[in-house]
Structures are given as structure tokens and as C-alpha cells.
Image 1 (cartoon, rainbow, N blue to C red):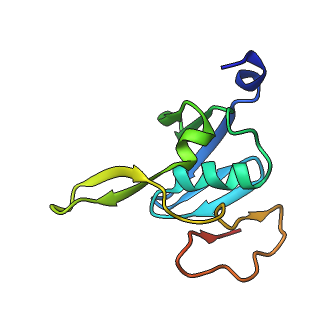
Image 2: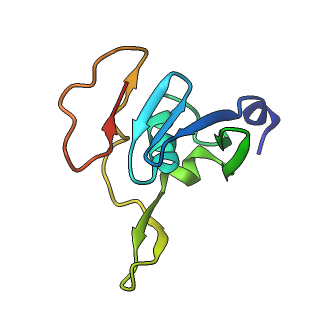
Length: 114
């Protein structure tokens, strides 16, 4: 990974169990950090950019790159155990940036919040 992208590390804040904030973007999803990776790419961030997600003062998750995080989701297996799976969704998660309203958010995608 180039040092250019390391200098642009994204620091995300996990809020509650289903929200994540970073770079002026807030997403709501059952797997908010992975949804944030998709939202950041959708907002024009380079897929090679690393991301650290913090819950208060604790590092909760580190994505080597937002491209790798965007390619994943979490789904329960047949026994109800959460597992990482490949993302099969469409476009990047809908997001709300700096007070711009999210319009037409499909119910099957993570919901954008303020």
C-alpha cells in the first residue's frame, strides 16, 4: 500500500450498534463499518484507503482498505452465527453528507441518517 493512502487513513466513529460516522458521512446498517466503506467509495474516496473504526477510545475494527471492507457484509449462517460474506448488493450505500437530505433510499439498503 502506498504511503499516500496511509496518510489519508479514515477514522470512523461507531455510534450505537447500527451507525457509523466518518468524513462528514453517516450510515445506518446492521454492519455499519462495512456500509461506511461502501459509502466512502461512493463519495469518491480511493478504494486503497485504510479505515479504522473506533467506539469511544477503543479501536473496534481496522479495514486494510475500504475497497476490501466494501466487498464484505455480515450474514448469519444456518446456526445463527454471524459470518463475513461477499457483498452482493448494488451501488454504494445511500448516505447523507453535511445536511444534504437523502432521497429515495431503497428499503433493502442501509438507511442514511443525519
